[in-house]
Length: 322
Image (cartoon, rainbow, N blue to C red; front, side):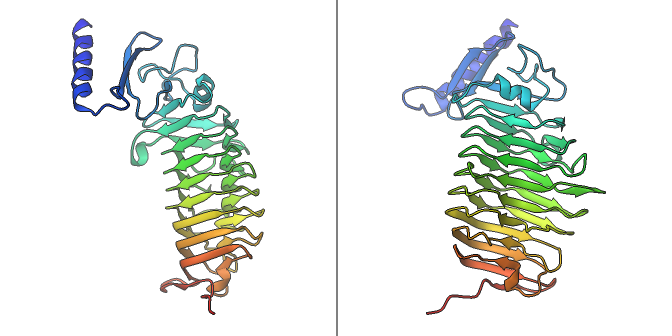
């Protein structure tokens, strides 16, 4: 044990001399965690507490502060966090969690970050007609999590955002399986101001889903970027849509698909204001232009659409003229 601690301290000192200091301090900070081990963390990532989740763990007092003694569920880990402290929950590679009651992110400033790549990323399966994760606190982050096909019919959403400044980054979503679907994939309510959806991958191929990314309320300054929605069966309400007049929406560098005939791909009929640029619309409505309902508030730049397979896209909506 003494030799191990010596090696740990030596490694920390080496990094201290090789990593640039920040504000007069080295970025590495060591503290003795409950449970007995010494943990070093990079203050540039967060100065808050760090918790670990893995399905091999146990939800019990004193657990979760190191990867050898994790808690078992994300919701329990959220309950260990302190509001506004910048706490981080690392969800271990290969973690599998079934959710019958919503995971509620009700502690401000908490990040839930999945570790691993490809299929080794953490996977959540929702087994009740609820939102898998509902974000009610401000400044939360969800990153690198796979949301599996539903374990029951009519799952209301993978993520529902009701807290301001939420970031959803590099998540993967599967909309349906035999006889079971999700109603929507990501929903943003009227209080989800400044939400960022970046790098989401949404797939649906078996049963129709209502909505992909849905602006349920008049949220302001939502940004949706680097998103890919691939569909083989249909989104009955569109793969991106507004149900209220959102303000200053910014959608860019994304692809939206809807395989359902005579159904819109991008629906802004409630007159959301904002910009959509550098996007691709893959639909099966009756005309190229009718794959987008523009409303009266959106501006479009370099948006291309198709309404048949094996065709190259054309600029849409109709190009402005003097």
